[in-house]
Length: 452
Image 1 (cartoon, rainbow, N blue to C red):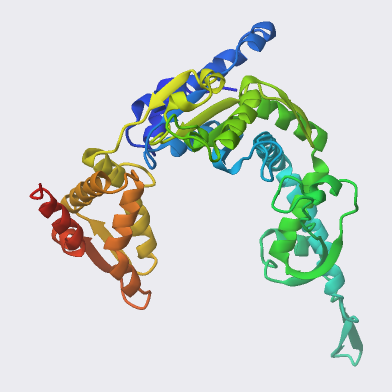
Image 2: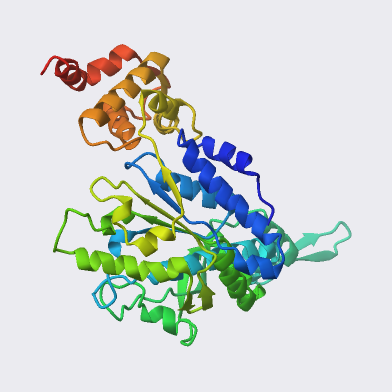
């Protein structure tokens, strides 16, 4: 796999995530090390395992987004899991092994999508031909029409008008999309119903076990030509690709390139001040996670996968428990520790203006649908950033998510009144407008500095 340098990776992450340079550098180096490892001899490659990363920081500062963007950047199999949804072996609930199965499913889907793209052109040609055959049967030609012409010398000329559909012309029209809205009747494969062996546990779905054994149910349905084309292309693509090679490549990618992001890991840490309660179960979940992080083999329906080379990124706020409250064996498997910074007024302003997916840009595009040209003045954005910092300092620190709360409150009346029944109108958000709409919040914090 060809990969960007760490500096290039950080530059790409900077387009979406503001600040947190240490965390970005750590994940960029970890990702580049994978590329470096892939260039070594097989014997040496077996000895090198990824250095797992532990991120510590409050909610909303970019922990999850860094991991998600990283995986998207290199098209690596990626799974985000919550540590709190797992239970110790022997208890009812989701077992830790399911995170590995989810990763394999993700890897298989990635490989399958790539293979589908390779055969899509052939599959589309085959699909259009099948649709043509269905339409030919539907559009049955009538009996030949005859026209009688009287000639000047008294003779009679009989002209036979052939009403038969030309298959080549019809196929060309189908390819051009002229028949896309036409309704046809065809057999479609019914999706199997999910039947759970253990209620509440989605990992023990009997349909997934019997899917390859039982014949697929087909049902006659009336659908548009466009929908029929999509269905047939999927069927044809599945027929054209070798699923055994897909499964094999999926397993390999999950093993060598997979990334598992374990969020809320601090919630399964046992605080040094806490005693009794669910602590035994929490420690049990930690001990269940440990073998997968250390490296083991897991049986999946696609084959056996080794977890030795999967990159694990764990994250947590660690407000109550500390990193040291995790069991020592688990701590040792996350050698790279990164502490993410609290967001300040300066970062909030950059979040509102710089990223490609900035919330202000999203809101402007949404309201443009209803003929509202929304514009934020620079002073207004600075005021929003200042209020966001004050809110986080005086209430719960929810990081950049505070901006969503403020923006929604600020634009509530505008969003409610907007409609497509008026011409394009320009709405400018000024500092005065922000202070007026958020008057109670501003007043509360202006008074708080006088209270001893």
